[in-house]
Amino acid sequence: MNKTILVIDDSPFASQQIKDIVEEFGYEVIAYAKNGEEGIEKYKEYKPHFVILDIIMPGIDGLETAELILKEDPNAKIMMLSSLCDAGTLQEVKSIGLKYLIPKPVEEDVLMATLELLEKH
Amino acid sequence: MPTIKVESVNVHRIFDEVFTALTQKISSIELTKEEEVNFSEKTHLFIIKTKGSFQGKIYAEIEEGLMEQIVSKINKGRKMQDAEKILFTMEYLNIVCGRALSEINNQTGNRSRLTVPHYVTDKTSEEITDGESEMLFYQSTHGCLKVTVVYKIE
Image (cartoon, rainbow over all chains, first blue to last red; front, side, top):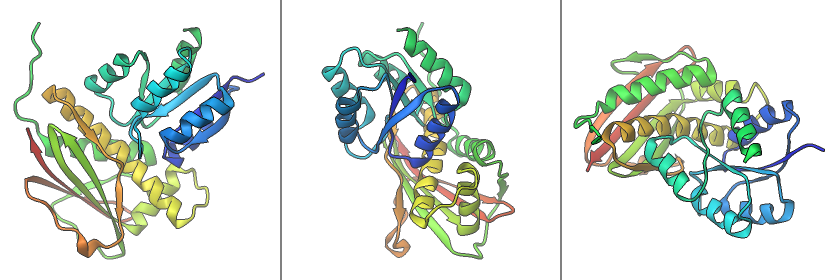
């Protein structure tokens, strides 16, 4: 059975790009959400193995969304994604207990290596 | 060891490097920097706001031909509705401006954030706001791009 991924990103470009990459490696994108509120609902509904979550979105941002998902499921495996990838943003990601932030545009090797790391934790 | 902060940030150079390098990387389109450009076809205007220590607005005005070519390349030639083309362009600008802002944040040691890009339907209603400003003009085989960065660093 394929490992499943929930993609939470308001950009159809990013969502398509992630799908194109991960499905080549045997993962299944089980659901998409365009904002944090929708993402939380879909997390509860689909219980994916992994979540790939954009930081900058309309409504609640990705960091707040991640905190709410972790409150629902402290074992949720979440990878953050952003066009803003400076030291301060990484620090914010770590401050909510997450380890991984990958930059946009998404690169196949970075995404897949990070998924593997996430799987091990 | 104390952090060394760069007191003056070359905003023009940062945005120029990021626009040319990332446009090439994402869409294989080469942008050539010019002193000025004259738009000869319909243009689309997008605005990205920044907040935090680098506070301002980034105005990106792009000719339709160039916009269509960028989104076609990044969507691997798949057919798109006009509304989707706008969304893809917004993501392209989010990526480029986010990278520029990351570099500014890293150099200044300060924190700034982007908002979701906004597509302007009524260009006549937009006025460039006050502040320091940098203008970048680009030509390509598919059309022109003008980027105006208006900002304050606090």
